[in-house]
Amino acid sequence: MNIKINGAVHEVSDDASVSSVVTSVTGRALDLRGQAADGGKLGVAVARNSEVVPRSQWAATPLADGDELELVTAVQGG
Image 1 (tube, rainbow, N blue to C red):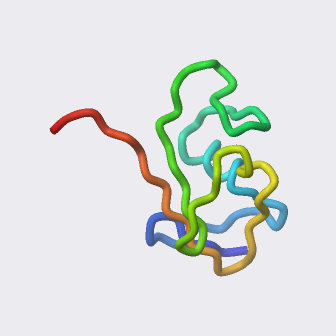
Image 2 (tube, rainbow, N blue to C red):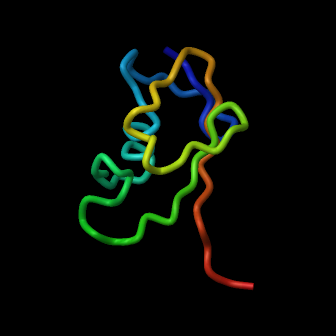
């Protein structure tokens, strides 16, 4: 299926979830709570179809064809 990630179309598997996309984009494995499995800070927030998805729900939030995800990364600075 095709979804948009930050405005660009990407093909993902039919069983993709928010968690699997975040793992794919960041290259970091996640636990079921949406935390980085390596214990480090992830610094990512996700909105699906303009609604924020709580980190604790990433693994349980399936994606559908045509969904639009916005992944926002925290950046230090001023």
